Image (cartoon, rainbow over the protein chains, first blue to last red):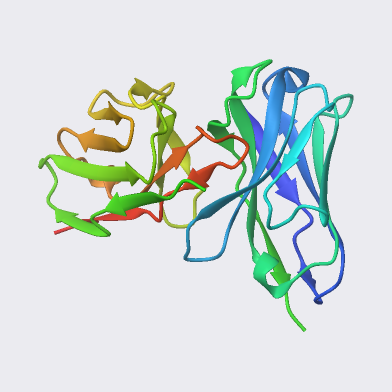
Length: 122
Length: 108
């Protein structure tokens, strides 16, 4: 069974930094592109970032480019989102999500974690 | 940027009825469209990808159709567990993926 477990969400002040983690199990982690998708409570979904299965390529939404960095450790089946220069508008649930396609970038999300809440507030 | 517009915003139906949800793209996305279901307090669940392919484990009462700019998610006969929010998502101009604003399917 595929499991994705996010952690690291806390309350942080504007301008602060935070690192989210996602622990994966139940599939061959290093065969799949991984994503972060966020959702303001009660609002819609926004794709944030992806990293290819081999860690060689990353992509970011314009809203986080230059502030967020996505990385992975395939030896630990883990994904990390380093979030710097946080803004109030970054407040959201952050979901780790697995790409549908093996060794490709399909940008469809077939498994999701339960989410971790990041609150940016003074 | 491709904008996805979902309609209606809210759909009120009874169990056993047929549900038809619409997603319109501001420009063609080919068949690169997915549908997700989200229940309160839960993560989204992939239902349909590439406009018409059911994801693993998705019941046959869910079907997707369309191409270009107009897409439809149909639930043939609503079960109580189907009442949720539904989002469409396009991957045509990857990596700038976008989601629709959602349709809330509520019990009448």
